[in-house]
Length: 310
Image 1: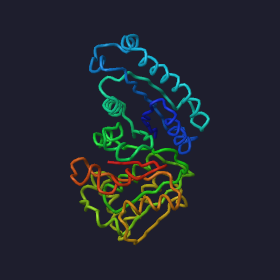
Image 2: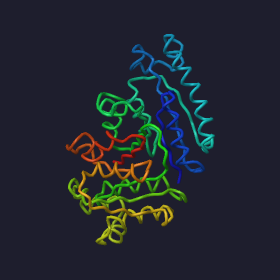
Image 3: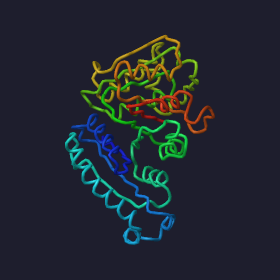
Image 4: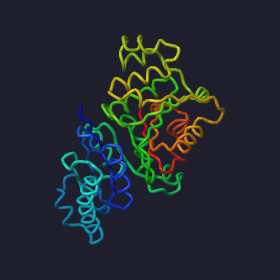
């Protein structure tokens, strides 16, 4: 089954770390399509003027904005070459450079929802995490406004292709595993560790049986969620069902008493994982901006990718 990922880039050297990440994970994966989108700020005069054609806006741009537009176009050509060097076939990649219509975050969200994507990837420049996520950045706006699509946030250069997946037996963590299984289906090389800690129980909210059955069906749930060890068994079945080799799926259970977010980050650092895949509570949840565990993980993650799945 084909997968389609929206990649937000800004034409900066920082964006090339995103391309390296994609190559590290998906080189040779022919059934994944990537759409690189660059939204170019053009000044306030064109905001909200949907009746203007793109060519008309471009021709009327001030000098600096016109320069940014052409830089973005050149970057897209270089991005295709970079992805090819990293093992991504150019036929799998489409590119688009757009003039900002409303705001960068709003334009990205419009494309994400209209384009039927399976995930949205955005980068972070390695600034202060508080400033980057909570002071009006594009990342923060995407995270707070988009709960209907998985968000992949990339911080700096990610050097490992190993996945760490915190699980706690809730529907949220099983959704995260399901997303990972879908994205990596039939991947023979992906190394995935299912990580459970007794400390997770402190912040875990109970999930009703109907919540699971609504997504995976009663028969599957009766078969894989009734076992006392279902916290590991059910996620493993999702991964195995997507063609991930059993020898590439690992269990890690710890009873250390650290806060869950610290345990996750410590484990990622000690065992050199590159990507953390986490479930995410719905936007109606009042506990924290994006959840009591995922929020500090995002704040402190450096040189890591964090996938948030709602």
